[in-house]
Image 1 (cartoon, rainbow, N blue to C red):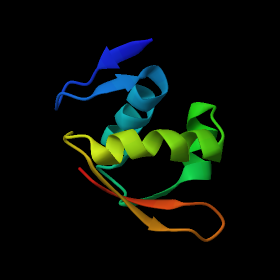
Image 2 (cartoon, rainbow, N blue to C red):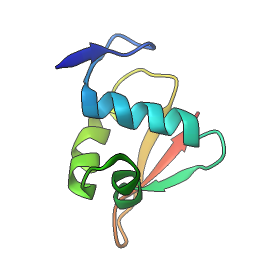
Image 3 (cartoon, one colour):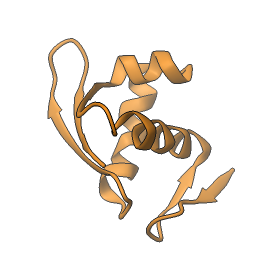
Length: 80
């Protein structure tokens, strides 16, 4: 099932939409996120988060996402 994101014209899946909403909320207080920790919060694996973050990073949204590091889980730099 696909839904259209509120910012930008990219269509996101339900998982991608959930990750984007998580980043919007938590990105106000924090800048760096590990895939495994996002996954724990949202009931996904780190691999699922990493695979879905690419669509968010490549899309035009009110959240900027950049792959930042790889130690013990991919780290993402998020700017809201």
